[in-house]
Image (cartoon, rainbow, N blue to C red; front, side, top):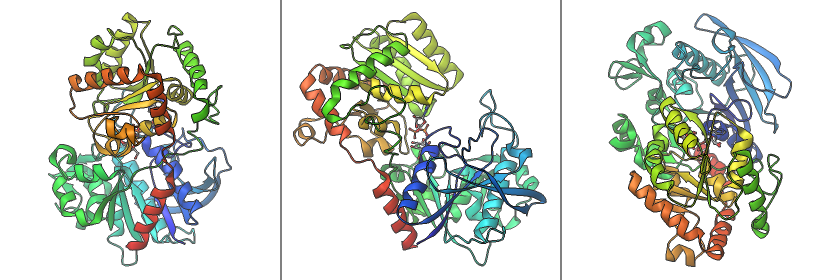
Length: 477
Ligand code: ADP
Ligand code: GLC
């Protein structure tokens, strides 16, 4: 049995802005099921929703600040959670990273440096918790100073750093480094310095014993200039200590047979009931109720990464096609406005909900026929897996985890029953339109379509395999 400290800035259902939360909510659970002693460390944001009791455990002093560590359990499991309680940094409303205009909080470097210092104290058993981990598993830039700080310790656990997205690196002006009072020894081009900026993510990339990312394809992609965002050489240099482990999904939360957000449950043998969810979705989104017309769904952060601009380019042509399009998301104001405009002008065909809505996300997965995910890059992506589980065939671009989890519909894959979606290569509107046309053609053959739905629904996206791969990795270092 390994003792694992899992350091993360979000975890579903406590607090979520994206896929990192899904992973931090479900991977520790899967590791616990494999018999490991795992504890989560997460900032105590005001918007964090703990449903189990929260207890005071201890106070640690880091960088002249007294920080309380509170303890609770994950709402839907027994996994233990330690909350970093420093009200000045975390006890205010809203999103963990950005203000209501989408701008990063001005003191983000201070907030997450403090978080990493607390992780370091716990990792070295100096936090009066009487528990020393064998493994410290950090995720994304917010926790990435931890491996760097731990590298200075004589007695330290093994460190793993998982990249969920290379596009977010946590870079700050050089002066921030001094203000943070970080050790001078870490400030050099092989350390936390990046072209005279402070780079949090380099703490993970340069100092962790092993780096993982969330799909095998993305592990290769980030070693190239197109996906490495300036850090490709460092990643190439560390390639013997870099691997990709595909994310799983929480099969209890995302299960069309028992999903509490749905009024109509279904499985492969009762796929006709999926139509009831389609009707409910059309009704909820104010679209004409029509069982025949294919409904396209999208749930996404509305940002460049997700190919929203490509979709905007395709919309005029899509409007000529027999389809409806349901969108849920928020992000860049410009994308939101442009999508609003299309929806307002075409209320019979396009319906947009701006915001974050868990229930609607489940209904879109269940009620749509086809799911659009034309990402420019996608470290793993979860919605394409949720879609397949719900018999909603995804259209994806061949990149990162999308390439690793969706099998294109081709004569050979139809024959061997592995086809589970539509895959296209070029990040261009023309290629996306072709893929959309291909999906409509496939949809027009109900028997063939049903078989594709079954192929998709029967795929194994459970965490079990991936959690075992993390465990093998922990053992191998
Ligand atoms: P990323 O983390 O890059 O945003 P993922 O596909 O890994 O992409 O995960 C996104 C997660 O966030 C999924 O669980 C998705 O359902 C959810 N999500 C994204 N936008 C919304 C929204 N507006 N409302 C509800 N859930 C959303
Ligand atoms: C990031 C990536 C996404 C991935 C998620 C969880 O947010 O953008 O592709 O699925 O992390 O690993």
